[in-house]
Length: 101
Image (cartoon, rainbow, N blue to C red; front, side, top):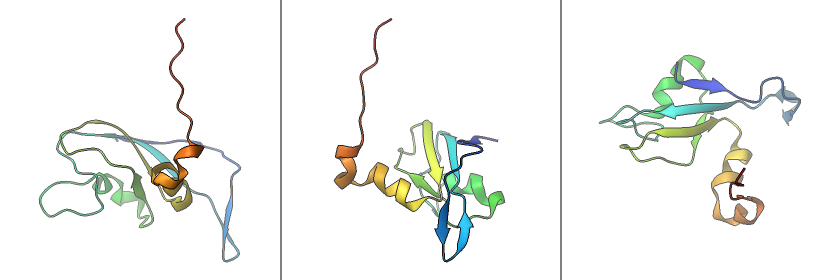
């Protein structure tokens, strides 16, 4: 298995039409040759690895090129996804330089 669920036991809850739902967050190590898409006719997609979860709301946060390997977040939390990827939220994201020890 190439993905790991993160934030286990979180108390964050969203209400959707009176039904309490817990968003899901996964860290996925994207392999070489896999495309960051929901569907593709020529190449395997990152979402192919999540078919067994039967969650149609899952989507990748951002993109990595087909030839690139590395960490990719997968979530069904659309608001979280948008805040991390949409340029209008750039001022909310703080990236700090690593400190020398």
